[in-house]
Length: 273
Image (cartoon, rainbow, N blue to C red):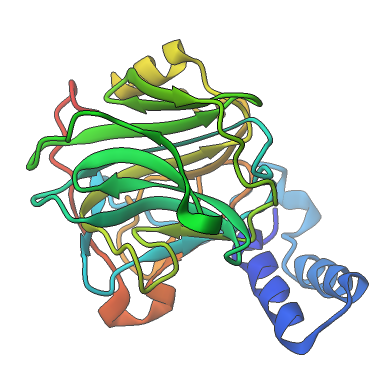
């Protein structure tokens, strides 16, 4: 298993765009980097080379709504019109005009933003800011909530606290995302103020029963189609570790201390999480 391949791949891709490497050159650099970081052959397939230190606590990220955000790598993330599911736990103290929870996008040409507008959970296309689905009832402040956006190949579905609240046949943007953001659209806009925990991305459409179970706190390991699973339970540091097989590890505030959300106790009850 290579060391943090998700961020390494993302870094190579970003460098490739800056200095205009060809796709073949990007692939060659990525392959060489992975080869340099392989564990010894006798370490076995279950050897975890990444320096993950679990705090042993159920932690969440606290975003200040001013400049805090997080990002992750996007290996095997689905294109916009492929089946997919985005889900996350969150809590807010005030109802802001606009706030992003999870944003997956390809520049500003394509993508999906799961977030809130004046307390209403919804999902919007990145290109043109067009609404896909929107809840009718504002969430309550000071309490944990679970939000999930699903596209099953033809229909957009929105679940809040395990229940289906909205659907539409509006076509999503179609390109494959190259960036993944938590708590913002792009690091400067739609900044989220509140707490966030257990962010997931799937390359499959999760069923109503699966999302109800997730809301009830039942989330088995290695769920089919899981490409991102961030728990934020690290003991410290700017890296957030992906617990999916894709290792799409992320970073708090691009490693810049004033932009890094703080890890805090989640204080979720069993019925909440």
